[in-house]
Image (cartoon, rainbow, N blue to C red; front, side, top):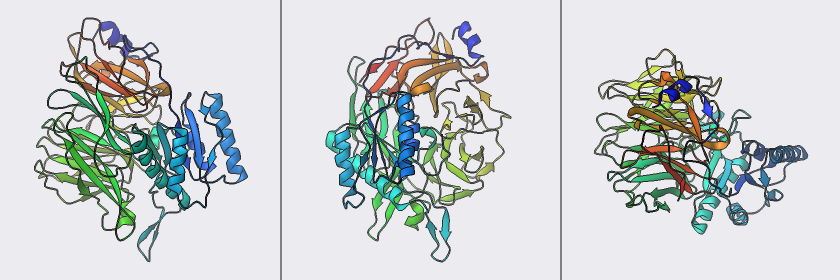
Length: 532
């Protein structure tokens, strides 16, 4: 890395100039459909849409006068910052028997790339002590519309054959938080991954399931995809891991009807063995609250990592808002669920391997601007909790660092990107307070003969931002530079077969974009975005 770059890095600056070679390319923003029970539910969605969004609002009914005035005010404010609305809000017949069909017809009228709705399985806020069942005080219509919206979005994607990205917003979250901080089913940060043959694949969750793009056999070939992978009906989130054997492991939540009534929600996983080939069968890892479907439906989204022995460690927030863990051996044998207890956690966990071969897990606290750290040294050791770590993450920002034993997050007080490792007395600030969401990256990149860590994140307006620092020296700071390309998902980074860093985004037109590092004496440069 050039010396001048390292001097600027200490100031934590963000350059408004794109990294050399990347630059924006024109693309047409596709509509987003906000599908909710009433006008008041649409307001937080509208307020969190970035400038330039094309928005269509779909409500079950028109609500009262106060609700509609709040909707009108939100629409006026959004138009003032550059959002465009597709006509007047759609109000569906509240008495209609086929709600899913009505929403599906409306989606065909709108033609959305994104669908935003509320949590189909809202969290309980009380317990019926006689029946020992959870009590959910959210209006029943909210969950019903959300479930119908998910079914309609799935059918719409299968009909049109192009990806539809879905966000389910948790109810009851702090007003004014951005979408990334409120998502019930998070998008992955490590969704770009090299296979055993060196070719890259990109995996993202959509309304109809996981879609995959696959790099061509030669650099001049276009990527194949997006192709929908076969599998169960999945919720719109995904965890992607590269196992010790080089295979891609996909982990998510499935939701299906039970014969006895209600819905079964389970953690499921599948493995990609060969690049571009069909994914292996999806298998169930269960649910820590599986004895009661009413409790099981509230399970949090899974986080996972491998230890040095190749054992998969999986973590979920359980019904009681503590963490449950389960292990899977390299041969597929599962341990029982283990409840870690301790501090109550939010729906935000990240797991990562330790430098000594063990496993770390960090979870954002539910009731404070804090986090809890769990650590397991080896199979013979139990889990150890530390709730006094100096980590105060902004919601939606926790992510495992590419270096073993580190976690990245945005500081709740300033939104600055930070890095912390167990045992450190304080996190290290890396600048970059613009934007929201988690931070991805790779370590060991060659920049002018220096081994460097390259970081990627979303900046202002969702534009992908790239930065770097010498490996193992985050204290030298990061000089962030915009790539010029907005992304609908957190940007991802991986190495290609020639050891170059590849950055991937999904543009506002829904198409995959990739930029490759240009190795040479001029620093960190990338090719122009290649639209797939």
